[in-house]
Length: 188
Image 1 (cartoon, rainbow, N blue to C red):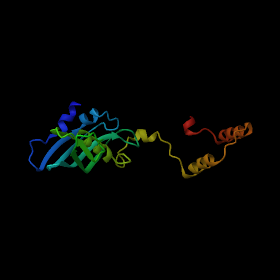
Image 2 (cartoon, rainbow, N blue to C red):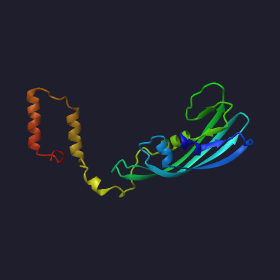
Image 3 (cartoon, rainbow, N blue to C red):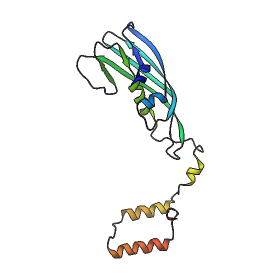
Image 4 (cartoon, one colour):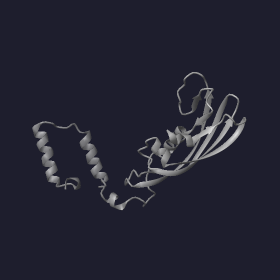
């Protein structure tokens, strides 16, 4: 993945100590990972890399905004990103799996690729519910939703909790009940 080169740090020539790096994070990185939920955005990743004789410690902070679909109206919505994390980079001749907290490199490596860590950090920073601020949703889309009253919801819950009568008489009784209730908005 060519985009990863833009998120790599060549550490071999660095002296032991702390070194700072900044990266611009946006749509190209999200596309490189095939993200379906991140449609774009602009974030800044700051990496404070501490090099010691045996390992690297990357303290990463990411802030900015990304574009996702609003959970309420499905239109594009800007969501703020604010992430702070630490990635340990250790060296070994043995194969180890990357677990999101420790990245293993062979002793011959001379640069660390942070693209996956940065991408995963942005994704994990997304809030559970992604919606526009109050009043920001598409009113046309919101108008298509039918809001169920508390009474209607209780009736639906009662019907769902009741044991269905799958006999012919039970099905006829249900059909009669629905016909007496008249057409519903979703049946029009």
